[in-house]
Length: 164
Image (tube, rainbow, N blue to C red):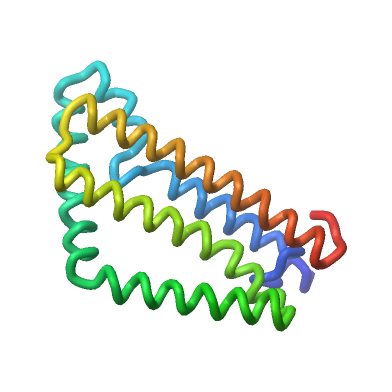
């Protein structure tokens, strides 16, 4: 029972459930636009207009945050990730390894979202080009998710000598 309730270790069921839930949520929406709306926007002009609105509002919000505090957020994120990596892989603390294996790919997705938001705001992207950009970015996030889970499995197997 204690193995089932352990929270941040590679042999915990809850860690893998958390991995799946987080990546499902991240890949289900790109810049706040649900994937089903992207599919419907290709054929329905009303949905396409809503996608344009949702994406432009989210892009302005994210880009504005990046303008105001982007450097501080990037520095803080880098500091925390470096600390987790050092504690986890140099000191051998499994909890830090598990958090790092979840947080590092999420930071990559966050960087990707900021870049997309800045691009949408700068180029005033709308219509089919916006739908295409959001769809491609979703594929990128899915790729990061798959690689993140595979990397976590590999770390759990190689460093701790146990198969998941």
